Image (cartoon, rainbow, N blue to C red; front, side, top):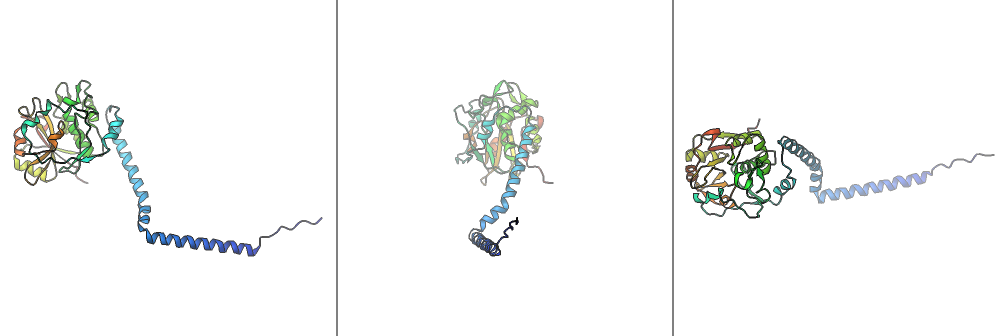
Length: 297
């Protein structure tokens, strides 16, 4: 019985395959060349995308690591997400503020408003937080005192930390950190040491301003620092109130971030007027601190 011979592939058929593959490759190369010529941005986007993904991944890991250092942070995930969405620029009203407007410490904004604003400052864009924000106005600082009436310190700290450090901190989280680290003063708000303690813990430079002349303070703002001011008992407040002096304007007036009043934060203020109402306290660097970014290297 004869064994059937195995049929070999036809040389003519193999040549057809090679020819077809060559034509397809040429067509693909031609289409790719036309696409690159017509849309060069696609190439740069394709090259940069892996780098962007790596950068995003690195940033996310840094923020996660930073957040894990918080002592007993309260469970406020929706507030963290909400605080970063829909940010709009806080626009100046063009009005000149008056010291008597600062009595807001006793008349905190009590409506159901939530604040999504970012404002300019000597250090760059800064998130604005308000202690009367409906998301946390009734949160109990130290498990006893409402943020609405006693939370100006943590709220000011949260603005600065969230804006100029790798961390993202809401006012209740800053209050929790303050209470856990001994900066909460029952029935009074915060110890003055909160400012240096919290901001340096998150890597920022903080210096007590002992020369509080108008010229020196103006120079600090012009050089890129922001100032945290402890306003004293008088026409502004009965107990003390932390605000942030954010920038100096060409006319010599300043802008502020008042944790207790959005309206005050849209006005211009005479620097001499604010300096005259600083609290007469000299402990823990009070009543005025200069904040700046850490030096590189």
